[in-house]
View 1 (tube, helix red, strand yellow):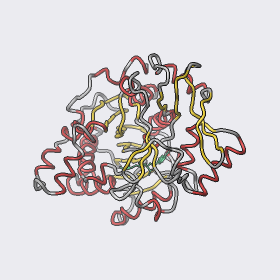
View 2 (view 1 turned 90 degrees about the vertical axis):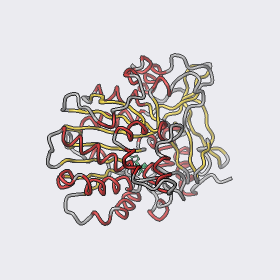
View 3 (view 1 turned 30 degrees about the vertical axis):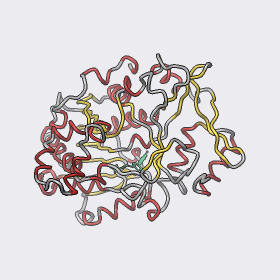
Length: 391
Ligand SMILES: C[S@@+](CC[C@H](N)C(=O)[O-])C[C@H]1O[C@@H](n2cnc3c(N)ncnc32)[C@H](O)[C@@H]1O
């Protein structure tokens, strides 16, 4: 049995020995982001193959540059709507290996020269190891002064500093989540204990009032035995994003759902999954620090939190519709049918795969009723993000 990275397992076990069982959210925080041994935090040579075809999981940017190209096109339209500010700042949080950034920059330089000249691109990543990989993949862009800068934390960006676009792809699903189970006592939380060299779960009362309030709003019709996840950190993040945006857009891509779908009564086991070598499992207590952990995003709570802090919801769509709205068919037309590039690009659009699992939420601030090409097609009813369960 592989419990995981030995020093990480020892560090988590020591915390439990000192303070007693910990909520699952704390376990996930340590497994992914322990400063020395966490999955995303270890040295670059160890992190380099976590994301990618030979790694534990791949993202859209490993598949094809088309998402970065479409985002550059969308940013150019946002730039025009904002009156072409100088600089136009793109702040990308959680850039992973930096491939999306690279694709965005290449498309921007090639097709949107005026925007490229005014572009300031900020990469925020809490992992020094991932930052090192980003620098490696972006080496050829480092020469132009003031094009790229890095930050470790959203808190390093001053309030109202971003005039342009705040962007993330598969960031929120990597935030630690609270895991909940409905029992005869009501909603309880999964905590983690350590016995005889193994992590074990136990059910305890909810660990905070904020969590209890959130669960109460979501849980009206959850049956006994129902398990799910609550991403409270995403809501704090959304508030911080609203604060640093002065004028412009927040564009969030991730796999997830509107709350009425994510928390529907028949989704009894939640969406929490671990990824190891391109296969999924539901065993967070094995391979600790050596596999990724994720949960699907509740886009309704994100949108409502944004609304409460000054962001208006521009629209909500899926990746397929987003890319179609930005003319992906013209980009694909230039590829040889049957070529690996063509097949890869189509992979991002699959109606039963990445095309619909991935959603795109766009919010705006300081601009009136902007209309964006990426939101031209509407796969959801207007009320999708205002479900009464999350109101
Ligand atoms: C799944 S990867 C993102 C993949 C990437 N965006 C792509 O398109 O390929 C998650 C990234 O978010 C970073 N991250 C997670 N939580 C963060 C936080 N609170 N602040 C900054 N970066 C964070 C991780 O270090 C990692 O680089």
